[in-house]
Length: 373
Image 1 (cartoon, rainbow, N blue to C red):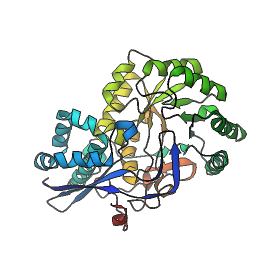
Image 2: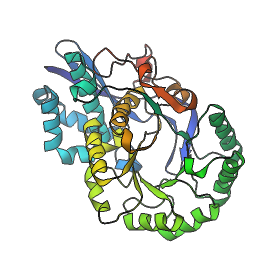
Image 3: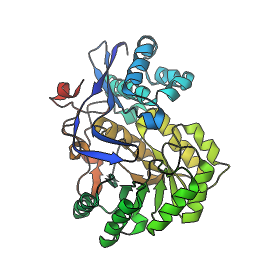
Image 4: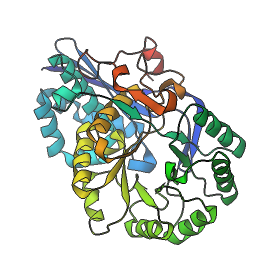
């Protein structure tokens, strides 16, 4: 395959409702969109979600990264092997720019699949998507009345697995817990995400214990990378710890081998730096006996949802949960038509995912240009 161009732009899609957590509040997407074209006229699409508080990236640094390396990719990438060779030989660059590289890699994989007339799974020698995927309901940091209303709506829609965002405000968080109890939620089906709220393990243990609700797992309660503190929290509360900001690269798993504990990896394709790096982390987690949540950044379009399905399909034996697939449940419009999103009970059947067109087989929305800034 001969590459002709790689172009990046920004996505500006409004949310149907603002989403808030301890790290940020969003009402629009913060994403990079990449289109790669080959000499035969085929076009591949990619997406990345830079997050300053997760990987120290911004939309502008992602665009700068792509502009800096564009010509090299045009010259050297012709197939999966040369794509993977660049990734492996430039690990430091993709470590520093995971969302930017994710957008480029997905676009090139999509393009390679279309050029070959094969799905991305076939291009990567993986099994085709099959069966069903079950998504977790996610509730942001809302005022008590709105929290309870959204909880009621999720339960009425058949969801039974839930993740809530904590605020670090004892009164606000206690109100959320009371709503969970009134709804009869089994704590074993509820995860809490703290987005690095507390300064240390002692403060996190104190406040979490005061809620008197045994969450099945707590995600990122303290500053990223404090594995010993996280281990203390897990032991004191008898819970699992989900690693998100604390695990943005596969080699960080090595730090956990000296600290055995109930670790769960939140694997977001954009955060990890693309599909190939995400699949590497799945293999490394399997070797270490760790479970995985296939997560999502708030505001992902159906393109990243589709890429995450490739990961989830290859990690079914490790899955502790799956998040995302909100589509137009959250976005005023999606880049993909029809959007890939969960239905009743959080279920998404592989049979409903577009196929047969090569690559990710996704058709862009006719209003796509309105979303491209």
